[in-house]
Amino acid sequence: MYRVEVEQEADGRWIAEVADLPGVMVYGSTRQDAITHAQALALRVLADRLEHGEPLPQVDAVFSIVAA
Figure: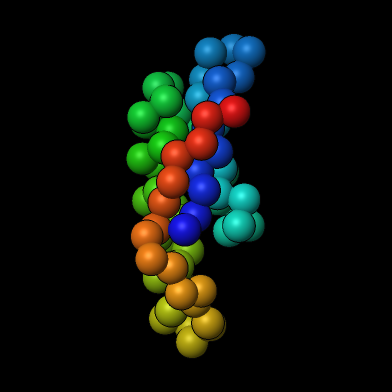
């Protein structure tokens, strides 16, 4: 399961990151916006790995949301 870590920045923006997938870090104007964009980007990264024959980890579920 990939953890989506969510935190609000000092300027009010929300940042969401999937630390297990390098490069998956996004900002959003709301908490849910940041989570949704992080999940979408993570799925794109996983699809890219699959298309290029890279191994994917076996997971029972895809995401869990973690507030910082």
